Image (cartoon, rainbow, N blue to C red; front, side, top):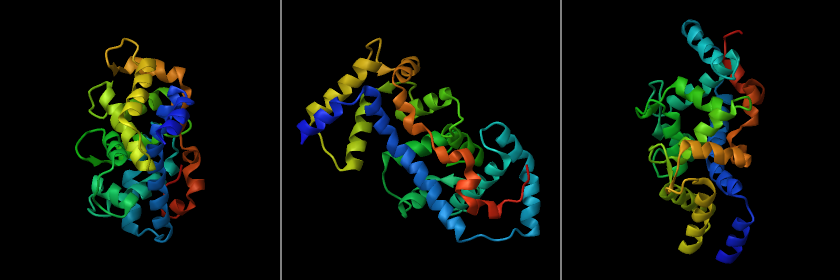
Length: 254
């Protein structure tokens, strides 16, 4: 088992091996959007006069968010419907709590999942334990096909920087690989695991100090463009077409 796994891993470039680590993150974000969109499909309703007034008051904020992202105004309004559904599932306070993210994905408000924890932590830009709508749009913008490559590189770095030290450390890569193997139902010997990590750092840690700096990460990603393959969600190019159920709840015009 270990030999076969070793052969397969050895046939991959270092970028492809780390690219696989991004897959659980992208899968979580995809699952989240599709799960909530199905709920919205079954709960479409016409806006009341109060809701229309509320939307008019939000118009300036949403316009500003759209102007600073790859999304159109209608798409930002559509994503707000998704956000409202998520942020009211447990506590109706207009903020997404980690338990609400957990509930949407796993139908249970508690449990441990490294990938969900990292997605939540990176979305939570203010580090106050909740995700605000502005943070939600900022994070989803990174996965838009039109997002700048530098934004994707920065976001991926923050995903791997588990301890938020400004470096990707050996133990963090090890933790990530173990979590991926666990999610896949696979197991490796300690020796093989260390071999994978050794190869990763031999390629990425240019100054040999045992950690990957932001500058080294940028060089590493530019040499291994496949690393960003899972940092793009093609359907975010036109949210309102892929999720027509969102349209029924929007009132704003471009």
